[in-house]
Length: 284
Length: 289
Image (cartoon, rainbow over all chains, first blue to last red; front, top):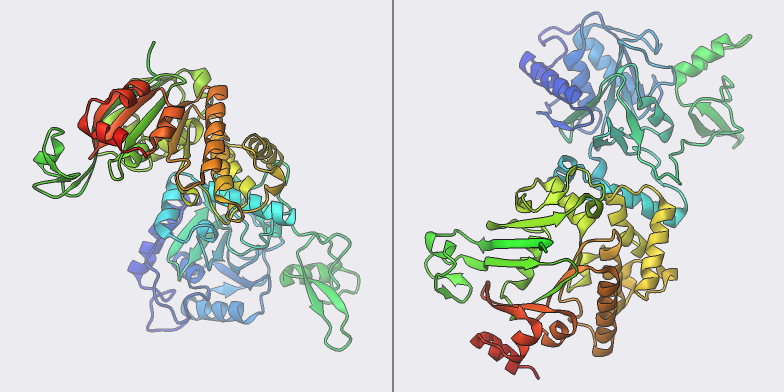
């Protein structure tokens, strides 16, 4: 652990403020709480919101996992993990089940999260209504009055133009029947996992200076018309080329040499776990 | 018989306000206060409206007609005054935030913004002079009409489209063009789409703000006929704002004449137009081409 800094880098007052804002966010599920986003040694827009939440709630006994689009080994995840361990000295893992605190960018792990774990999501654009309303004053009024007609109209327009809803990531959800919330740019595949989740979900947007939360067991519903129900990505007939899973979110890859297409689990840790269980299996 | 809508002492003042301009008898410089320069858009307007009645409001430009309509449609906040509606549960239907009938006791101007929005969406329809104010020009016509259904809790695309297409048929817009945005349409068609939108949730009150100004004469006549037949068929309680006395004569039974934010004359339309008492009304009637 680095000396000359506070535990977890942020000074104690900053951590206290962020913890209070997190408590407020938990008390009003789905409501965006403004907070004083601090400077960090990484640029705003690269996960500083999630990082500040993680740094504020992490303790010396926590076991940390950081993923970036499902992968433990991508640059963003590795650097954030390195930074957090340097300023806290906590243990890290890539095993979802072994972690107590998980920070993620744009995915929710395949393995079901349980009570007691905390998932921190990095959020670039916290305002779900921004796509239909430019003015911040106006979107705040819309949230205050639960006036979400504009978003429904956006869905309707998408349906009559393309016969389906064309929102691929960050699909707007209603939290606890009250606030419309952006689930951060997770694929639609992960949206059902937000509903009545056993673990606490915290969302941090550092550049936009907002924190919001979904407490455990909260009702989270994607917005949908009765005759055009919400759908997750369709991977039917495909399976992971490494572990053979048919029930995971898959990434399409191209083999540079042969040009052949392959489908691989986006959650690499989960893929490794499954591969190891295969007869004679080796992890990628 | 009780009026369905009662308006009492409604004023709207833009500016600093002083003791002089709050007095509805004060002498004004045009529509402005002599002392503090505040603009008195509406001053102490009172009227009752009975079920199924059509009220006309005439006056020159800047007399406060449109402002009055905006106040009643909760688009702007009043400076003072009250608005009372009398509707039983059957007429009210199910509106979130309202679990008892409106008995005319509650001043609707004092409701919270959510209640105002719900009431406006379920009970009122507005047709503006400019379609740009009433329609979203880059959203499909069906979406424009369906928006109010969504606000009323409709979550079915098929139902929205069915309602939109039947309203478009009724207002003589080809429903095959339902998925086009209204900016592709002519002025007369846009006005018809506005009417369809206003009627989408079966409102009790219809507000028409210069609905045919800017349309050519033959289109004007057809839109007026449409409004009149819809009004009679649905028994809509209606307020028509216009500076065109012909329209007022054609549509309304009672008329209010406004000048500088004040009502200077009110009465049966025939009476007001045939035998105007106030000098401004006389001028208005005599200046008809």
